Amino acid sequence: MLPLGLVLLPGALLWRAGRWVVRTGEVTRLPELGFSILALAAPYAALCGALALACSSPLATPSLPEAVIAGFVLALCAGGLGAARALAPWGRLARLLPPRSRSVILGSAGSLAVLAAGGALLAGASLAVHMGEYRALDSSLSPGLVGGALLLLVQLAYVPNAVGWAVCYSLGPGFAFGTATVVAPTGAALGPLPIFPMLAALPASPNAVPGWGSVAMLALPYVAGVVGGILVARAAPTPAAEVAPLWGFASGVVTGCVTGVLAAISGGPLGSQRLAAVGPSGWQAAVVATLEVGVSAAIAAGIANWLRLRRDPVLAAARASRAADDENRLPESAAPAGDNGHRIYLNPWADQDNDPPEDRPPLGPSVLP
Image (cartoon, rainbow, N blue to C red):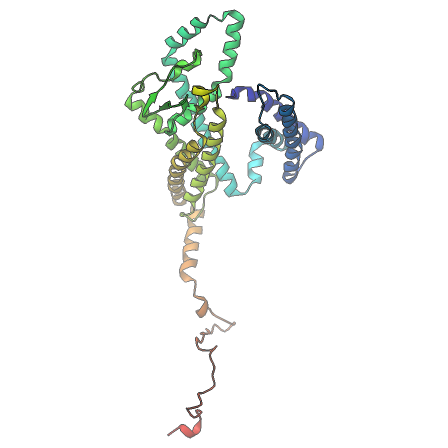
């Protein structure tokens, strides 16, 4: 299980590298930004793969595909953000995007920010409640001055993991710390834990969290969805009221995918046998986050867009004009033709054979009375 706090160091360096690539390469247009990011991410991923091959030994063998993919994604995200920031300020970059894409990105960013803030608050509150157990575990280790400093650094490196686990806890599926264990709002079932002070924040009994606390924690993803839906409606209001919930749900889908990826990389085995399963399930977190955040974001976006239509006369006029055009639209068979306003009606039998049958005389003056 990788301490996500350690990713901050290469992430910060890749941020600076992305800014350097843009400034040195004199990148001035948004389409050129993608090539600059790939020029940074591809060599970094190749370097990670080379290091994985060089570090292989009979005792431990790094996974080459995971090293290459993880290095590429890290360089693409951190270096891409640094390169984009060097190209232009965030506000200007947002205005360069299409309105719908901008609204979905802003909505997803708002939902993820609320989830991260709620997860950090939940993890910090749980650690504060179990501070006595934390001090007991820390004193039992007797690390000394240097060991205490190193232990503190390791725990700080695992803080992002704890925040991700708290987010998965509020989503409902929770997480595991060992095989046949679960920590969720419905209850906790844990086995023996390693002597690590930070693990004192885990609930020790099924009834450690009161009922009102579980309800408050389960409301976090819905609050995140409401915030994301409001941001979607504010970023790109639309006169078509039935379209706004779809874009709100799209922001929830993006939020769920990002949450699932973060949940998957925040866990991992800490050993063999019982500690082979540690952390949340990535696909469960993605599915639940998509449904909870997406549905609440869709409802919030629809309501916020409807209220915006009532207050904004320009959008209201556009919606009225759109409705009038739909009502006054004629069918294609009765559409006016020419400049004189005459209507041309289609003959449904025009493609049939007009020749009279052989057993019936042709129509003409002789058949008239």
